[in-house]
Length: 88
Image 1 (cartoon, one colour):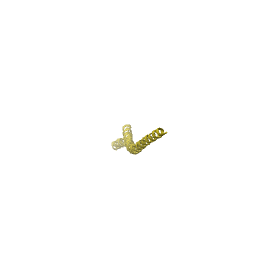
Image 2 (tube, one colour; image 1 turned 90 degrees about the horizontal axis):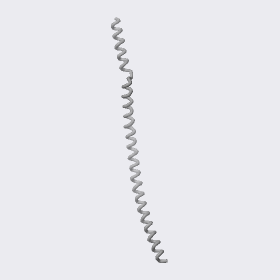
Image 3 (cartoon, helix red, strand yellow; image 1 turned 180 degrees about the horizontal axis):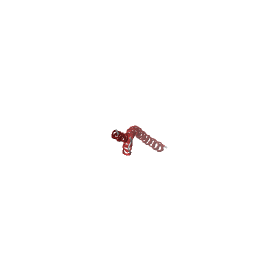
Image 4 (tube, helix red, strand yellow; image 1 turned 120 degrees about the vertical axis):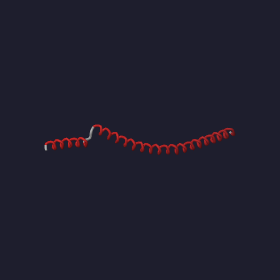
């Protein structure tokens, strides 16, 4: 009977130790959580990058067109000034 109780106590202690979180298990779980968070943040960063890239491309094209139009307008005004200066 005592042997059975001792065996039960040993088995119970072993099982209790298995269900407790060991330091290594805690570290492994923290690393898994960190990996999950990093993957989530990487996806968010990728989405933000795509939005910014689209915004930069569309605004960059618009600004380049605007600059070209302004330069053409400046040339036209300079020609007009030269023309009016020559006739006066």
